Image (tube, rainbow, N blue to C red; front, side, top):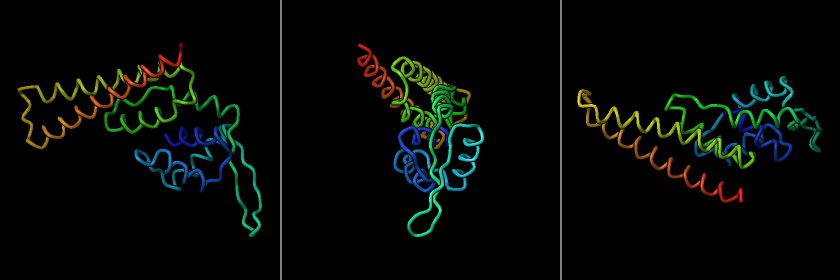
Length: 175
């Protein structure tokens, strides 16, 4: 997801690594907070793959600043990363889905519809799985497990409602 966040931010403007870190916190900080230690290798990978270029500039104070810009290949990679399938792991699903949805403005209406449908389908499957666990009479769930499962079901229900609203808004934009 870190590459997706970086490319999304660079699609808007050229940034330094510090600015990328700060912008990730401002734009995605509620559900993702990669460290500088994760950002630097991601920038190296993206540059190696031709997704971004660098420009070095000496500041007035004599400090070397490196500015990162997205390339045409990077724009294509951004679209690919937004649309690629999410992990089936429920632990990663919600945070990664939130990152992708936050980047959906980069997509066409048709691509948004595809993304929303895919994420909603997965959210419905995760909700169904949680409901099956809690409703299975053979499961010896503790009080705490039931509370956590109830919470997961509520979270998925709310997320599905949000996705339905996004689908409706997106369909209205196509007219």
